[in-house]
Image 1: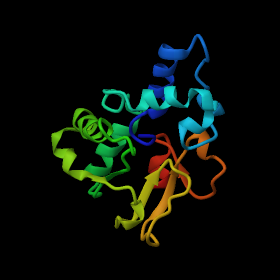
Image 2: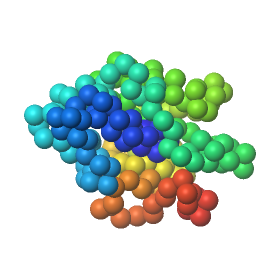
Image 3: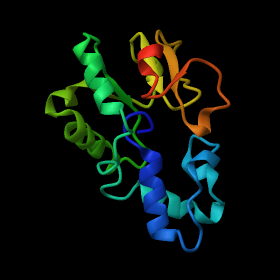
Length: 170
């Protein structure tokens, strides 16, 4: 989510359906924190968490435009593409639904390519494309971090990409 699955759109739509009349969803271009809960007033924290921990939230996220075709193109060019994802601490639905999302959008053969970890520094690879601006963990990673461009990570320096410029960056 945030690179392939459009967490921002899913959250924005769910927020507006649930609380939009009381407190409209923050436009994406005004998001400043990687964690969406940090961009809303504290009085809405339980509402924010209720949205992204609800059954179906992760499974039903739309794909970021261009993501699925880009992943398929990378595979066709012989790259060993893996999905490295961190589950929420409130993982009851999140983890299973991330597998379901992958199967729905990339097929059942792709499910074995998902790596689930809270510490991405322990994963070996050449490149990690991630929307989280700062990835820390127990070891110095072997991979190069390429930031998937989102408004909340624009303060971070380093190479960045979108699904519009991925061929140039990767």
